[in-house]
Length: 395
Image 1: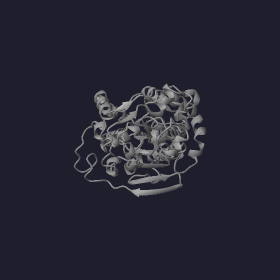
Image 2: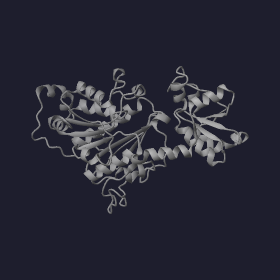
Image 3: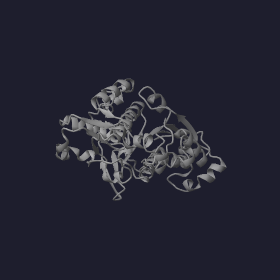
Image 4: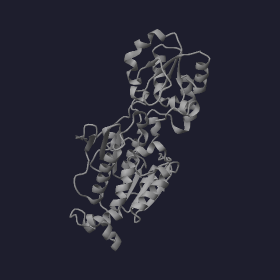
């Protein structure tokens, strides 16, 4: 990736700072100037964004843009090493900026405290040489991909889940894009989020550091970037595999006869309600999946009007916190274990999980299977801890 260095100089302080780069023949003085002249947009300042920001700043990338709109939560600290305990409650961008400048005061940090959308993505991305996608949801991944292709910017992609990760480089002139690998998003709810499925704390550090390596290689024009290749990381068994990814000539965004010429509604594309229709969609969802609040359930239990309680979490989650259950069937096993519920078909069933998402899926599944009196515990065990019993651990 060509970066103009004609007007770039390094101060004596910078020469000392980057000494170990300068003595590498593959980097040298000219390469360090390329890094200083380069600009990289980081989409997300969380798990993957943490090692990206830390190592790109330390390497001397001259300009980093950060897109995020979240605040630091205590649950982030297990993996998002860009932030510390003192930052809980602060906007992630403020915490990230302070940490980046502490690592390297010679870096320019641009902050975009906003959700990346079809309305602003191209305007933001066009200001940078390349994009590093550290997002955790499918609508934004497709948005970043399409915006990068339309803007002609390389997209250094990574994703993580539980013990596994993926890294590739999309959107180069001769290489594939994210849509070439994944033409269609998975059905909504099929792939659980990290909040539901968990993630090993060191995994984003491992995968994000590989992602940062690819960014630096692209800027310097050295080595063999992951263009046309998908690196699969299995941290549990410490295995690395590389799959070939070919450019799809029929791809609607980068193919020979593209049909996508502008950014679209990516929530709708991924089968989610568009942001303009969230309220109506929420109302419809509530009518589709009946709910019971934690206060209503508590009152029922206290007066002895006990429904059948079904916990659809994993067994190891029960060891962390529980409000009791008659049956424990993980939601992924529910379709094959419906027979265990047959004796309760004519009774009221309340389904719960950690936050209410998995139990909503289970409630819908049971109702479709003919169980008529099924309700989802709104907010799950987290709501019970927050509103009923603060001594119950949150996780």
